[in-house]
Image (cartoon, rainbow, N blue to C red; front, side, top):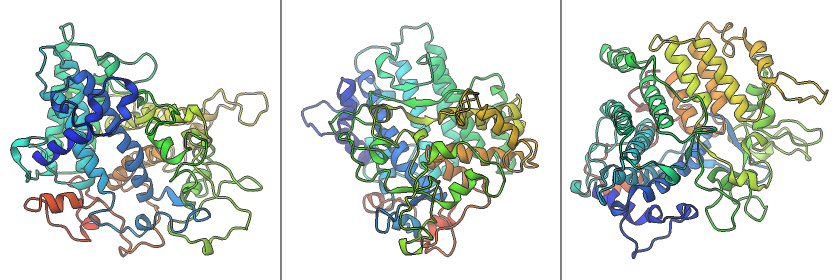
Length: 530
């Protein structure tokens, strides 16, 4: 895949710089060695940092807009998110998602193929293999067929072939199995430890290769469960055979985060990428496309406020600010214009809240970890796998642990005294108890346990991993009441995928699959059987 290979060697020269602060530097320097000839200890942190920025910023934004969580603050901007609310899919619509991931994952391939200085980099190679599978799953989930088996190879020239999405999914499992096997084989060997090159965190006291095995197991579980609604015997046999040996496997039970040294440094690119986009600049002013741009939708507010269920969710106050006089949580419909808002002149729409760390200018917000996979998502995956009979365990307990982890991530604990009466509120436990018998929210009250898992996962992903929320909505069909934008131009259809970008249409026209405007609405990813 020569086109990708050449671009990455220039664009990602940041990964050849040794100091942590330079993981953020993407300036081109023709005097630096090509990335493919730089040792994995130097390349790995830059690779994780650049791909992580795409996931936590652009993909997060896209997904939250596609599932109706985010609206545009028309009090501060004219026509915010106009293309998104019209579902105006074109070859330039979020084309940076493809371009960034296809280009930047080349560093993982370079690590896997490295044989330069005689050192044993098997730990680094295993991590690169895991991370490459992680991001290629997202590429398949958002585009379908992609160039894969010739990935990042100069020998394919400028016209890499496209591979079948389902076949790629099978190989992702093979890749993850190989990475796990490499970790096991490298234990006790002379393989270099990851050390400072590992900028991923797995909760307190993390950093071992066992943590990376848990992450690989969890990604594998996600790959397999994404196909779980497919009913053909071959797919079901594949899922059950791959998961047969995983009942005793360890999965992630803490948040998987990234932090290469984020800080509120005045130099460009040092802040946490989500904070840099939706929080504040280093001088304390709003960032250019910031918190003042994003507002909650009425749907998001009513979902958390329990309008239809009668169960108020304390996460509302952590996900969105209360504004106005008196302070309330206020949202708007996607595509709603200023003239159509039923609001008074002194009304201020809610903004992204304190639980996301972007509500105020602070060094802590700028330096916070970026979320790659949350403990809540991992626990909901396990709950579903147990409920489907793929692995053993207690599905209800895992489900409730997932809810608890979501609350904890946002800074809500049973020891909190939210009403300031001097006594702990049992915040999480009270919510689990109150919602237990409520359909779609609680375990006991939901006839469809998969819907309850999907609904709680949807809330847990809000504003944290929008891409995953959008993909899971396409897979499960839950929540069932997601509204359509007021200004959509798709005949009431919500996008199910992205279109191939202009870079492919112009540079690989001989192989890129044909597409029309309707492709993004009707050409579903292979696992989407809704």
